[in-house]
Amino acid sequence: RVDRVAAGAASDLGIRPGERAALIAANRLEFIEIVVGLSSIGAAAVLISPRLVAAEIKFMCDDARVRVVFVEAALEEMV
Image 1 (tube, one colour):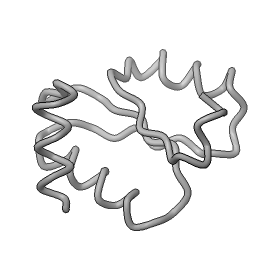
Image 2 (image 1 turned 90 degrees about the vertical axis):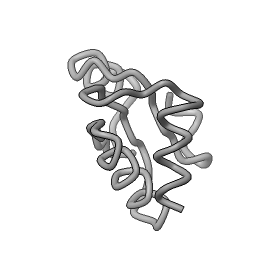
Image 3 (image 1 turned 180 degrees about the vertical axis):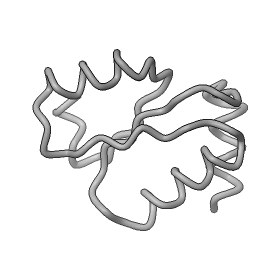
Image 4 (image 1 turned 135 degrees about the horizontal axis):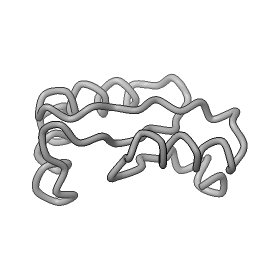
């Protein structure tokens, strides 16, 4: 599954080595798969706590210059 995440991040989302992707999710298996998948293509995962408010999430994403945000379905209304 990590290989599918890596392939999708690179081909479908266009994430390249050195770029950053944010991840807003609770601790679960998919969290690890995304972090490892991004790492395997040379991208960095910016881990954002789901307890932050929208303004804090925006600040972190802007500051880190993330290209893509992965959000757990249950937390979509936060973004």
